[in-house]
Image (cartoon, rainbow, N blue to C red; front, top):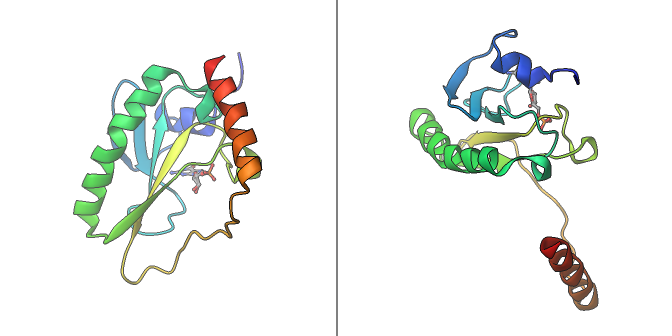
Length: 139
Ligand code: 5GP
């Protein structure tokens, strides 16, 4: 059996957390190193290492819980906005390889930001990548 992840140990109560919500498929708690007040992690109970490996049932449960939790967090904290961030793979910034979504409230005084430097889409590259992804979707 593969080693249990940090989040499985939290879900099973072995490591304490500030729990917010739980159902058959998902578990939500406060991030231990919050970017802002109310920074929450919504975790699938299924310990998939990235979202492309998550079962449809867990994915559906995450999709259902995200707006409900986001609404509650926004209402309870008075945040003016929020970001939902989800990393997959170490190179993408994932430090705990167990599917989770960050819900990060933004306040008027918040200093954090998520910025990137976009490029213009190259039309021939656009066609090539769309063809490749469509092919992969139909497999
Ligand atoms: P990632 O970088 O994988 O997207 O996010 C992992 C998150 O888990 C980080 O924001 C980190 O602060 C949080 N985290 C790591 N260890 C613990 C822990 O023991 N308890 C809680 N509540 N959060 C944790």
